[in-house]
Amino acid sequence: MSPDLYRGDNTEPYSKMGASIVPFYRPFPYLFAQFTRGNFSKLNVLDYGAGRGRLERLARLMGVDHLTEVDTSPTMLSASRKIRSARAVVGDTLPFPDASYDVVLSFATWVDIHNPDELVNYCKEAGRVLKPGGVMIAGTATPRSYQIETKSFNSDFPENQNLKSGSWAKVVVKPFTKPVYDTVWSDEDHKRVIKAANFNLVETVEIFEGRDPIWLIYVAVKGELDLIAERQALFRSARDLS
Ligand SMILES: C[S@@+](CC[C@H](N)C(=O)[O-])C[C@H]1O[C@@H](n2cnc3c(N)ncnc32)[C@H](O)[C@@H]1O
Image (cartoon, rainbow, N blue to C red):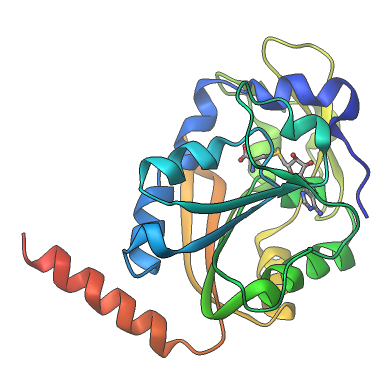
């Protein structure tokens, strides 16, 4: 299991990351609406690696009533200003029965998992707790994001220039100066993990900074795709009404 990276100096920078993180979360409401049945208040949603609860705010605004948040770091969970019903999980197994959620959200969590088998296990757990036809929406960073400087963070360091998938990357979150370290995974490895956990990848959204995508959001479905085709047809017909 990954160590609690957030126990020490990492909590503050990551929980206070500023303006340039925003585009990463912007496609979330659209994807959530497109790949669920739209009756948000009835959905059972799990935020797996919830941190300080950024997605909770978005999900609640969309009308999600049943949201469970879990995280391996009690420090990150308590970084939020308000008290949430978030749960600290210990170990690699989620304390929930099989097929109990409609949607699993996973944002900026894969970069905290350094071991490829653990990453597969994390996605398998997401798949186990999802109902058949359930959806995992997983956002993560690209290797390119660890070679640039943006308004909120700097990763433009010589030691980040030849990163391989699975390496540590140095990140300085502004205005802090002490670096934090993420694990870089390639798009191929993300897709391999999604497949190894028996998901079907149905959509990949790229979020650009300049000419390169620096964040990716994968939408992956547990089991048969006909349910998804049905949901997307609904979404298309709603769009065609306008
Ligand atoms: C960079 S934070 C992102 C938090 C939040 N999802 C967001 O978008 O703001 C990553 C979080 O994933 C948590 N995490 C890492 N590995 C995990 C695991 N195996 N299970 C649950 N949470 C995990 C960390 O403790 C941390 O709070």
